[in-house]
Length: 511
Image 1: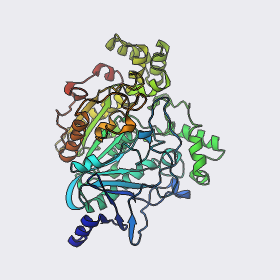
Image 2: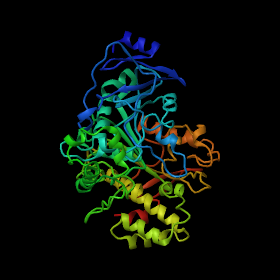
Image 3: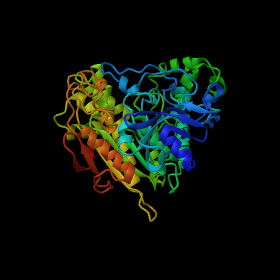
Image 4: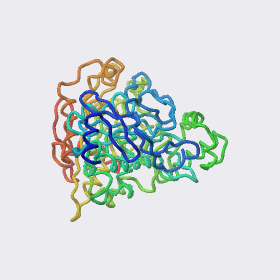
C-alpha cells in the first residue's frame, strides 16, 4: 500500500486487502473490521475440500457487521450459562470463513499481532462470542485477529476422498491471509502470535507441529504460540477417527466417502453430530484423548508433542498452561461433582489411562483430603488438558540444539469462580475473560454465570492481559522460563507466584 492509501485508510477506516478494500468502524478507540473473508465459501462439495482463495470484489466491502458462523448444533452445559463463550450458535450463511480485526491504527505501524482460535469441542463456537472482543488488545498496542473455521463433520470428520483436518487447514489459510494482509491493518507479519483455547488450543498445537506452518524456520507463518487448556496429546489416531467416520456414515445411511457426504445438507450433518456420542475410541495402544466428550479432534499419525520433540516449532516461543480445576466444568453443572463416588473415580481413570489403579493411587496419595468429586475432576482435567500440556511444554523446552532461539513458559490459572454455589471453581474456560480483559461484562456475572456472583480480584484481568500482551510483543510474559529440570510455572490467582513443577507427581503418572 502506498503512502497516500495508508493516509486514506487511517482517516476513513478503509483498508485495501489483496482481495479488495474493506470499510471498518471506530469502536472503543480502535478500528474494527468484521466479517472479512480469508477463504472462499465452503459450499456444496467444497465443504469437504481444502480452503481456496476468496474471489476478489469490486468497490469497498462493508466490514461493520458480524457475519455468519460455521454450521453447529446448539451447545449447552447443564446449569452454567456458557452463552458468552459459545456465542449465538449457528448463524446461517455460506461465506463464514472470515476474520475480525481490531487495531489501534491502520497503515505502517508494524504492531505485534495476535491470532485467536476459539474453542468449543471442535463442534461449536465462533468469532461472535461476546468474550472475544479485541478492544483491550488494540488499546494496548496489539492487532487482534479472531477467526471462524469449519466445525464438526465438515471440519474434522476424517473422510476418504477429502483432506484431513479441514478445520486446521482453515486456520493455516487464515494465517496466510494475515501474513499477506496484516501490514495494511498496522500489524507486523513477522511478529504474529497464534493463540487458542480448548479445542482451539489443541488446533494451535497441531499447527505448531505442521510443516506447512514453517515453524522450524525463522520465516514461518507465526513467531509465537499460546496454548490455553489444550493438549499436545489430544489428536485422534487414524484408527480412532475411522470409527467415528463409520458411525457417521451408518447414521446417515451413506458410504463413508466425501462424495456421498457432499450430497447431505448442512442441517443433517449438524444433527448427526448429536448421534455420535458414546463411541468407544479406546484401542490396544491409545486411550480416547477427549474421554468421550467430543467425537471430533484433529487427526494425526503422531501427536503434536511428539512432532515438537522431533524438531517442529524450534523457532516458535511457546506459552502453555491449564486451569487448576479444569474437570469441574464437566461435573458441577450437571450436579455430578458433589455426588461422585469412588466407583466414578475408578471409571474416570479406566477411561483415560492404561494403568487406572496406579493412577487413582497416585492422586489419592497426593490429595489425601480430596473428595471423590475432586479426585474425579482432577483426573478428568489432566486426561483432557494437564498431562498433554506438560508433554508439549517438556517437548518444546527439551529441544536443545545450536540453532534454537525460542523460549518456553508455563502457567496455572487458579482463581476460583463461586458460580454454582462455589462448585465451578478454577474450571475450564474461566481464564478467558481475564486474558481478553473483559471480566466486567454483565453476562459473565451471576450465580450461574462463568465468573459467578462475586467480584474477581482487583487488577487480575489487567495483569493477566498485560502478560499475554508482553509475550506477544517480546516473547516474555514476565516470569521464569520453563525447562525440564525446574519446570517453573506461574500460578495465577489472587496472588501470583512461580512454583516448580506443580502436581508433578500426578502428571508424571501419565507418562
